[in-house]
Amino acid sequence: MSNETDSPIVGQVKQIEAQYAHFARKIGAHKPQMPQTAGAVDALIALATLDSTNILARKMMANGDLNVIDAQGLPRMAAMCADAQSAGHGRLGRQWSDKAGGASFLVTYCTALPQRLVTDSHYNGWFTIVAGLAALDALNDALAQCSAKPLDPTHGLELKWPNDIFYDGHKLGGILAELVQLPEGMNRLGAQCRNAGSGETDMSDGRENRSDDGEPAVGVMFGIGMNLGLPAEELPTPISTSLQLLYAPLPDPATMRDMVAARLAKSLKRRLAVLAADPETESPRLLEETRSKCWTLGREVEAKFTDGSKLTGKALSLNADASLTIQDEHGGPHVVKTADVGVLA
Image (cartoon, rainbow, N blue to C red):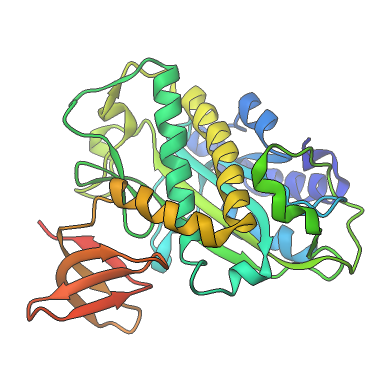
């Protein structure tokens, strides 16, 4: 079901299309055709270009135009996709480079999680990593569907703690997770959502969700950017890479974008439901899975903190709350929960 049939969204989409029409023509951007993704989510908003899918998603969730809880109190999964952005950004305000035509994957996924989970520091560190694992699920499944093989069979897709998709030390994509305060009357999950991880659920559009009953919820959105078809000479940094430089054969970038986006939505929805239903059981399983797919562990790293300080050392371990332990040059361990961690050469 698509929220593009809801009048508040239709009006905003038309306004954005008009606002960015000249820019879209200038860079050759077109509204993405994403039939697989439309069938995998409860709402799909696709635009040729805009400032940022995250900015629009936050606005729509906060004012209630995009409802992420259905009439039965179950979380919905919505996706917002752009062919190109003028002001996309990642962690710490870094700009996302992108190119029209499907060469760049620019999708924001929106849903709701129980407030009890969002406010629990033992579990909320897993949100970004869960999105990263879902991205690996989607990429690997889509590549298998295409019968694509790695050009260098000695390497595969991994995660760099806490939010990057890596391949042999090169960045393929990044994830930005953000929380959104939902409007009163649209911020309650039903008790049945605790069991939602056990199987698929049938979600309606949820515009009637105005009950004060149920469990308090918080909106969460995952802005995910990946390079699918950028040529080597257009990569934004020396450590960047693009999927078509790593695997072959691949379909055209626009088709690959739809394949990956649909699979990512399904995996993210399933993984979040399982975590919300039983975080005590799921977090140790996530810990084991992430350890096996984490590029960062065992390597020399530099952590940069928001106050400008830095920590250099060895990435020693991933912990039960998704934090990272770094051992400095004197052997002292430091637990890092939030930082920009780069792997040193």
